Image 1 (tube, rainbow, N blue to C red):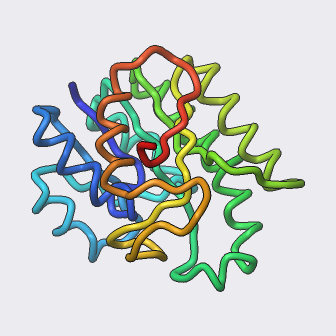
Image 2 (image 1 turned 180 degrees about the vertical axis):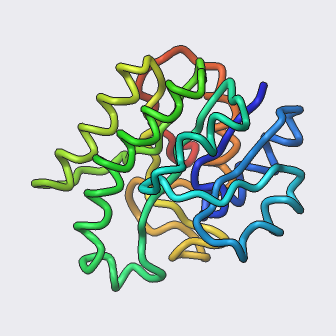
Length: 193
């Protein structure tokens, strides 16, 4: 299967891209940052420098001719302490950004669409943004993956998971590979009990 990971250089993308390659898929990963191209290519994938808010994003996806698009885009800060400063950016990504990815995936002819969602409650506009992205995924028809809080390499928490809804980044990536062929719907991905 030809798979594009939108956000291929992010925390989960860095784990997901090599797993998809190892599973025998032809993979591309998008990044907004040219300095991340080598990392994606080293994982055995094609790197595409594109921003979901740029006019050329749809053409960049279409050029790869994907069967599946996995949307892992976020706009998170480098530390949890800065999260409150990025709330509006997260809302924009989860609404306008995700709408742009859905439109680009449709135009590129992808038959599968998976989108990153969250397994924890968000209030107000942030919560409505999550509902919007899930609605867009289900209408594709596709999959909304409700991940717990990430921990592990490349995340805010590199040690053991605190109490609550958490998922190790490697487990989240492995479960996403499995969900690539799942029936459309909403799936929650947390650490095994």
